[in-house]
Length: 331
Image (cartoon, rainbow, N blue to C red; front, side):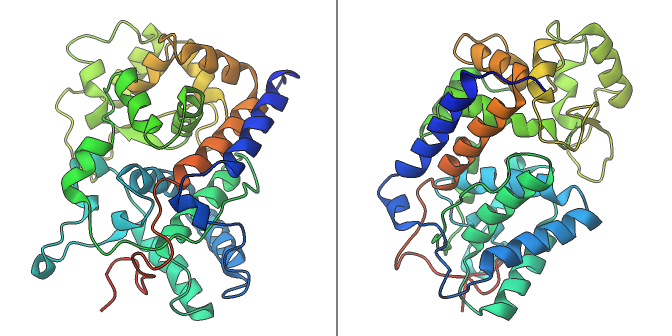
């Protein structure tokens, strides 16, 4: 990949600033938070993420999406992971339509079990999600060794009723998406980088058919539209994760977190409507072009934005708890 000598230093400076500037709650987070209470905590997460990736490559993609869904809904507090509990009146955020297609939660339990064996009741599920996303990004060829601060604590309640108002839909306007991320301190440049995570993984046809039927969206490259109709041959796609009809976000490097996403947008190959709109909106289009031209720049901005998002309103100090099982509030 070519690199831009004037863009990379700027992105690196932004990365540094993102580590130095934090809100009130995130001031309680710090690097190596578990250095005394659980010295191998981060190494254990990294080992588990690597092992799971080698056996189930799509887990690394899942960790990135899980962190986004957890942090975007009010706070990075692992509320996403709570299971429904009728007796307690708790409805899981995972049951929201906005969580459609999310998977691999069972492997969160495997990572947590490894942490509990080493340091019982010490490492929060919220920190687990942040560290797993960081290490998952690296496994996918994205930025490595992102300095992720820790010290988050876990929520004791679900935010199910607020999920749809916090998580942008796939056909939202750019303004709506920018506003949502701005509330977490992520600017337009950071948004273009974070949505670059769509470079990996896949999208179920249920979320695509509105762009394909009855006619192919005019912003889609004709040949790409033909491919998508081949993957999603009917407008009757079901909102059912057992339906295996899907399309890859990136057909060239489908499991690499790289700037192919941005290159595709410039060619009219954005999979979701919100993706393609980034390439034409004047607030985001310049960053799409810059990232398409420079993978190192994309990685630097992505790393900074991931850190910023991961520190959205965390519970710290004596707030919340450290769950023993990420699926349930402690008894």
